[in-house]
Image 1 (tube, rainbow, N blue to C red):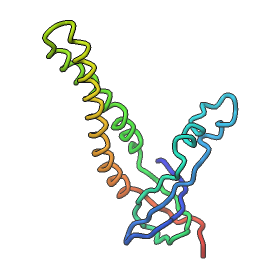
Image 2 (image 1 turned 90 degrees about the vertical axis):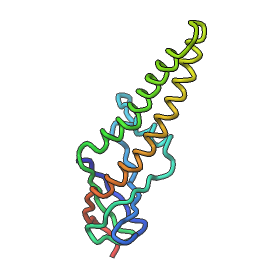
Image 3 (image 1 turned 60 degrees about the vertical axis):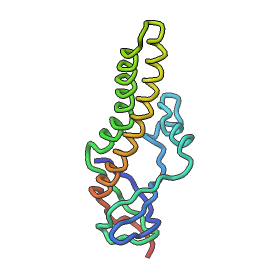
Image 4 (image 1 turned 90 degrees about the horizontal axis):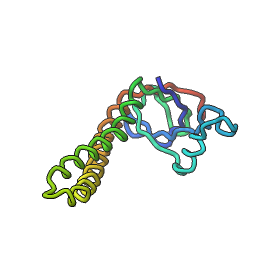
Length: 149
């Protein structure tokens, strides 16, 4: 299970809009031996991410909650966002290259086909990620933590 603490910023019916607390990764980001992924995340994601989760705990705005995602959600999301566009790039590039009339055109066709496949793969992944996010939100478990009284 993947767990993170979050603050409730809005209650929408039976759902909560929460902002995940930014963590420093594994705790080794500032050391020389750390991989630095926490620093990279801070650079690329300046705004805190907001998520919609089901309000099974009866939390209110300002409460701190523990959000737990089922195993495999993160792995499926990573595959969707990285592997699918890469496979589309390769497949469309190969198909486009095979359509070229001459060897001189093959590289150009492969380039255009690969770029088209990459864009199509990202668009497909984005559409599917929205479905995965809805599914993950529905499966998220919210446990009431310390909050405001």
